[in-house]
Image (cartoon, rainbow, N blue to C red; front, side):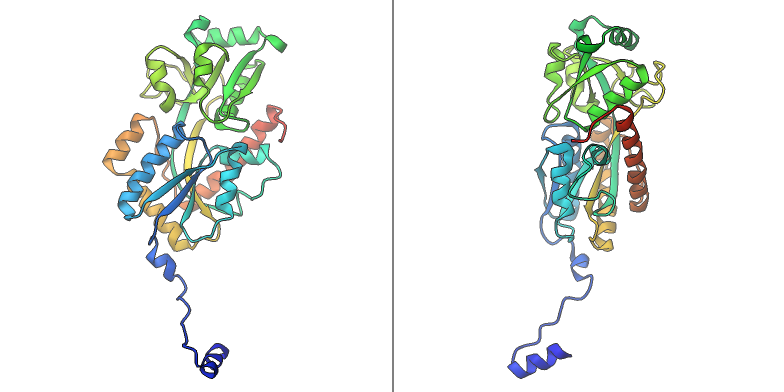
Length: 324
């Protein structure tokens, strides 16, 4: 009323405020920015780009991917947490999202309060890789050799960085198998050449990106981290099958938005992404990359994230990882 009186006194036109939820009803009316807190060319990056391509086709708006890695994924994640909650900035993240709180206690965002989980893309296992030149043929031989080396002679293992999924997967297996190892972190997922050359003894890599090197003999897959054998490596045993309890873990991937994003947008993004994942062409491509579906409603995905933060925190403590 006050606004109307002032407008009449000054002779100004009265401009009605947008109706609540109007922007949500027209979403998306422009390109969407998707921030990936990982290096380009990694297994997760490839998977997300396939999903975003299908999503772009469905929505009629381009999903523009921006890789913003560093600090265990916290830099890119913080950018989304602080973005305008209008549905035009989304986060594509993975297990590093739930690992980060255990490694970076002073993060500039709260993963449970500042972001909302939208949809789980799927989960994909990793493979324990080693150079064939090491002369080790089986996972049992590997563990026996690793247990015999301690201190400065201990095996080294590569990862995509401190707090990455590949780092914590290796720590989980190392603790289960009972051997010492020295962590050699890399920036992003480009550590496989160092393992293939033998300069670093082993590592856990997403099967999707390591498979070409495994098939042409540059890398040997000794085991996979999934609960069951994978279709891509049917002759490779799981770490559980080899007798190492609680050693299984699969990298998961999902989408997030700033916490105050309108619920109508969250629900629409969930519905459209779920529809994209069911498209035959995308489903086939993800299956070829050993991506297993994770059908969850947004609330279920939020609960999963909360539980996984506790799981990763306990693992980081058991492995003696120091906060950065």
